[in-house]
Image 1: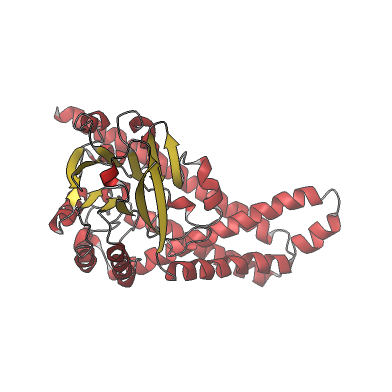
Image 2: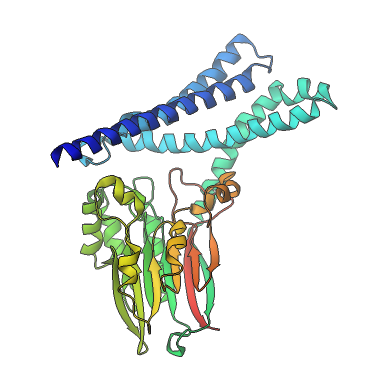
Length: 398
């Protein structure tokens, strides 16, 4: 048995080593491409060329430094140093800057590939000149500022009414507050959590649900945030399932922290709730990331076996793709997050290529799926093309 476990660990370590090598290779390729396309044709002086290249080296180096330093240390808060948060924040904004910069470089190159056949002078003298280089370097800064301002506007309440053909009349008008992907971490201000709690409680929802990635750090570092979360109330309870990010930071400590503030943690479990003499069942499963950490994996058939025919059945799971495994198991409504709706340009457009269910309401035969685009944010504190969403779902008898 011990040999089998050791073999699995070695295989996982080998896979992770290959994964890291691929990531670093791709990252270096992006650096070389961006640097070449910005500097090679801009007719810069030697000093200015070194300045631009130095900026890009610093930018890309800061971003890659975070996984190099912290990849193997996420499970231990004892290795944390005060400067880690500063470096991590700088890397996150650097990552967003690179994303914007790479997007505009690619778009320029595609446009100029076409324009080169009709207006080669414009391509050589304008599109790849010093002024174009300056614009390409400045615009990402402006987008970072704009995206940060959108986050500072706070959480937006999305009110969604979902009709159901066989909804008991007693449940007509029942409201659910849905929070997901808050990503409590050193990069999320305490006031953001405090303002969210106020808005949730103003809704006076019948049920409050959290569908994962609420915590993205060590629980012990965020006791003030948990004290705020403790004030969130649902008339008939507050329910929680973990996302993939909770597993990266010692899942058992995370689950214990949510249980300690009175949240009902659902791991392949179902809770019965009576509302206006009608039965509502709230079921939840762990995130698939649980398999990587040797903890209890999602078991939808096990949860389905706990369902009662007369109940209205709500299924909580972090990743929306699991709707394809759940839609025929008797659930009426699945609530998920994970996608962030892409969070910022251009990923808000590209997310549909990576996530089958990216945001909003979907109908899968007899089950409805709602994907919240994220109440907080991951990485840089910015959103562009999306917003921080708190969903108020109202059940409606069709």
